[in-house]
Length: 209
Image (cartoon, rainbow, N blue to C red; front, side):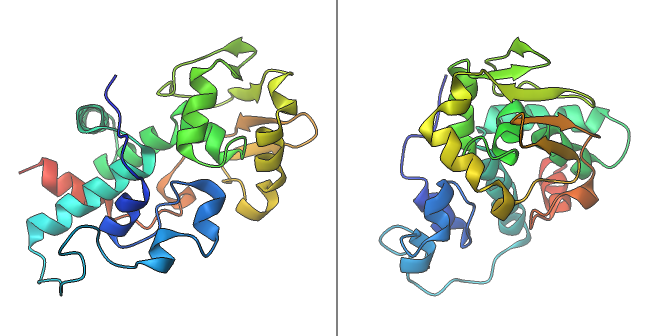
């Protein structure tokens, strides 16, 4: 499967804001945005020209796609599915992305980033309703319980990540049981539950061209 292998800090710099792609590093002075707050490349420091309507739409789509670590073909598939659902297409799209298993593992603080969460899922560390699921794009539903296998709960990296759960916070549509180190999907995510600084309507307009 194709995947992005270049520096993810370049992605944050290109979008001009923190996308929190490298876990704890994003909260430190080593963050690329803090050190070089301009776009990457030879002409990154040149004065930005006024953006066209299409440019704004494209950048918003790229930002969301990079936040969740999804390639273009898969992202377009989510959009087509969101179009067929009842309700507002843009909100449906964000809800589908939030329901991805790798995102849930990240939201529950089992991993420091979505990339790390994807690796945990791929390597068989995650259980959904007691059964192993190793597909990062698996969509959870209301009432699903997400946990790690017992051996994985003691992994030093997981323990360190989970210790930061209070600081990072858990979305209100998820319920975290700290003692059992497990999470439950209380309800499907709605737009008011999401704190992403995203204008999803721009993405709808882009794909509607």
